[in-house]
Image 1 (cartoon, rainbow, N blue to C red):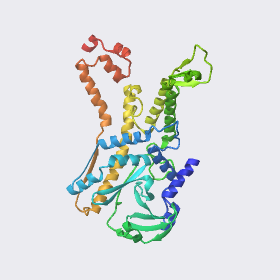
Image 2: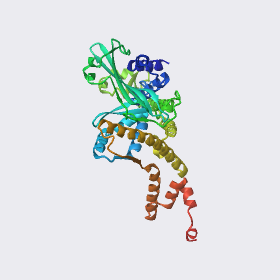
Image 3: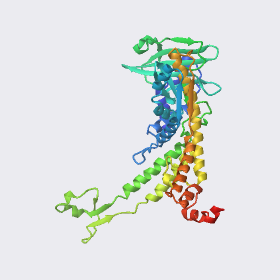
Image 4: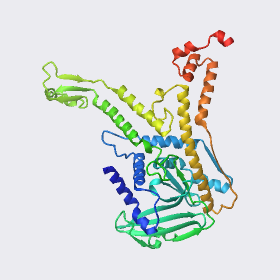
Length: 441
């Protein structure tokens, strides 16, 4: 409860939601529970999970998960715009797509918002306020807050995008000032802040039937509040990640507590020359060890194997839960080797990545449209093509083909091939190899 209250306080400082709702007369499409969850996912992603302590450090599994999904998603993507000028703008605008997509996967959603020319701003779910989604769960109305502190005052600008199928796109800008952080305060002219002086109070684009940004949301069911807000790719696995960090803490403690030491009678330290003894290895004790036992070795057995096995079991469970393949996070030498399990793991990862790619394609399609709009190229007749490969599945066939070549060259033994692809140990595989007569027949 203390942590949840802390998160709620952070959100209130960033987004005075009650004030925003009253000032603009809008109904929010995000609940308190969802806001707190987004902030928690973001903190976990930044290595600031609430369960961390001196004895429990973060393994940064949240970054490992999002990085793996982002890498696979984008490594298989080819995207192009038929208009050369728009293509160059798009390439520049998406240079940081990989790292920013990781943030979007961590917080559940992100917006890629053009700023004019080839400049864009990547905004993850913890930095915008959704107001309304359409029937396809696309963001139709949203507020982008901007905060500044000048002197002792806190300034807020609310950029509100409202897309209507009949009226088009309307963008309004309002500014506010408060003497206290976390409060919207009173409305002031945009000109009160130099950087906002040139912005229009309101502008409408009747011909715009799509948003002026690209919106990405994770393809994961929202069980937090059932809304269209995206959820983190590890939203359902926070407790499991906590267990893994804690288990690693046990492993770390096992090494530390089992560190070799030589217990020395305190009297021995009084003798000449002992000041050069390694204080980490030699530890003085006030117990009388006897005249013949001034030194006593302390070298306990380390239970590394049991703790490591438990850690690896947790990691495999996490891989299954988030949609990764076995070996992406866990020790690849201990993963299942049967052909059925290998195929199942790769299918699981392929399905997850394919769903992410589908949502990203929607986002980039809208982004290109928005870039064309800001660069007066919407009527240029451009086409946008975005395709993805399926190397996650084809890698298995490629590997098997290579093994067959190695088999024919004598580099791989028949029993090794059979053991690998038929899920048998080498002894069983060798026994099940066809006899020469069977091959001839």
